[in-house]
Image 1: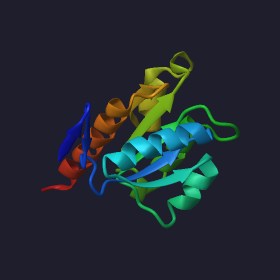
Image 2: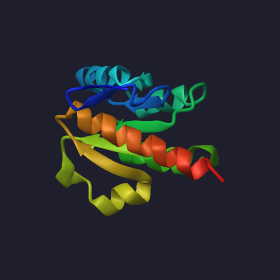
Image 3: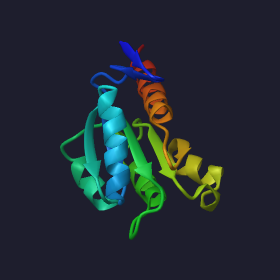
Image 4: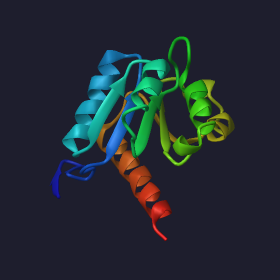
Length: 141
């Protein structure tokens, strides 16, 4: 693993991440940060597109924007909790509107944590790495 700044190249080696955000710039920023750290990325610009992607891509971690038109990140996370095979996938919320989403609602919907926009690359990589590691630990006997 090589450290550049505060971001570890390879810290997310082979970690599969689904990024859900309706903002193209936000998608590219998150993709860049996570791929730089070694993650395998699939992106979706809506909750509907993310649900479709989950039919052929099983992520280790999902990073979802909370505020999206039509079906927001909170509703998307609640939908995932209804699918037994998706319940074990940790979901990280990202939002520029922290005050709109009470922490209890996020937790009840299945989110493990939240990062506020604008995102800081090392924080995003560290949060995704922690969630991926926790998921691996849960699977071990």
